[in-house]
Image 1 (tube, rainbow, N blue to C red):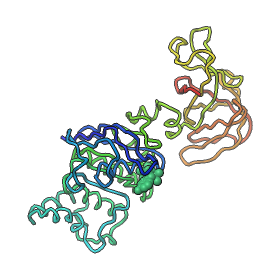
Image 2: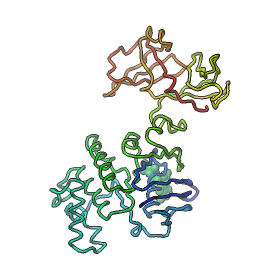
Image 3: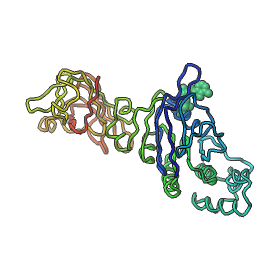
Image 4: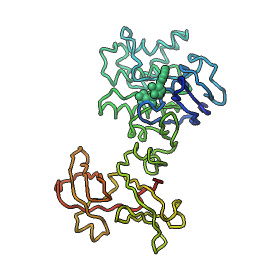
Length: 356
Ligand code: ATP
C-alpha cells in the first residue's frame, strides 16, 4: 500500500505563497498529473513530497504516517527530474546500481535487481554503455530505471519528457505508463502539457497561483472544466459574453450580441437567472463549419473568414462578424476557401456556461 496524502500543504517564500493550502490524496497505484502554467507551484509541491523543501505548514503523509520530519533519503520516494543528469563516467548498469550500493546491499542482490529493472525499461543490451553512447530517450530510460530500482513507494516525475522530440516523447509516454502499471506504483507526474497529462494520468490536478483549481478525471478536465481558467488551459479558445434568457419552451438560451445560442439546460435548472451576465466557452474543434447556405438551413450563424492557418492535423479558421469578436474553429482536413462567408453551428451540448 502507498496512499499519499497532502493536507493543507503550504510553502511561503517571505510574503510570497508558492503553494497555498492544497489538499490531495493519491491512491495506491494511481497516477496523478499536476498540470499548470510555469510558476504555479508544481515543482515546489513535488519537492515538499520528496523532502527537499520543508513546508511552511500542512502535512505530507504516506499511508497515514506524517513524513514532514523524515529526511528525504528515508522517505522511499523515487525521483526523476528532467535535468537529473546521469553520471557521465558510469555505465548504464552502474548508474542504476548507484543507489543500491549506497544502501550497501549485497552484490548478488544488486545484480539481480539491476538486471530486472534493465529488462523492464528494455535496456538489457545497453547495460555496458556510457551515457554519451546512448540516445536521449535511452538516457531517460536509464534515469527512470535509476529512480525505480530502489523500489520506491512513490514515484515523482518532474517534466520527465520535456527535452525529447515529439516521437521519443510519445514512445516514452507509453513506456512510463506501462512500467507504472506493471509495478503498480503510486505516481505523481508534473507537466505543463495538457495532452501529456490527460493521456498519462488517472486523474489530473490543475493548479494556478499555488492553488488547486480542479482535481478530476482526464475526461472531465477536458470536457467539463469547472471554471474559465481550467477551460482556457485545456484549449477552450472561445469565450463569448452573453446574457441569460429563458425561452418559451422552458429552455435556456444565451443572447450573445444580437444572436441567440441555446444551451441544453431547462430554465429552472439554470444556475444563472434570466438577465444574468455570463460567458459561454467552446472548444474550436467543437464548432461545426458549414457553408453559409447550409448554416442558414441548420439554424447556424454566418460570419466572415479572416484567415486560415494550416496546423498539420487540422486547420485553424478565424471567423469575424459574430458577437463582436473573433471565433476560432479547428477543422481536420479543411480544403475550403480562406476568405468569404462561412456558416457556424454551435452544438448546444458543447457549450459551457460560466458566470461573467
Ligand atoms: P515550472 O513549470 O516553470 O517549473 P512550477 O509550477 O514548477 O513552474 P515552482 O518551481 O513550484 O513552479 O515555483 C512556484 C513559484 O515559487 C514561482 O513563482 C517561483 O519563482 C517561486 N519559487 C520557487 N522556489 C523559490 C525559492 N527558493 N525562493 C523564492 N521563490 C521561489
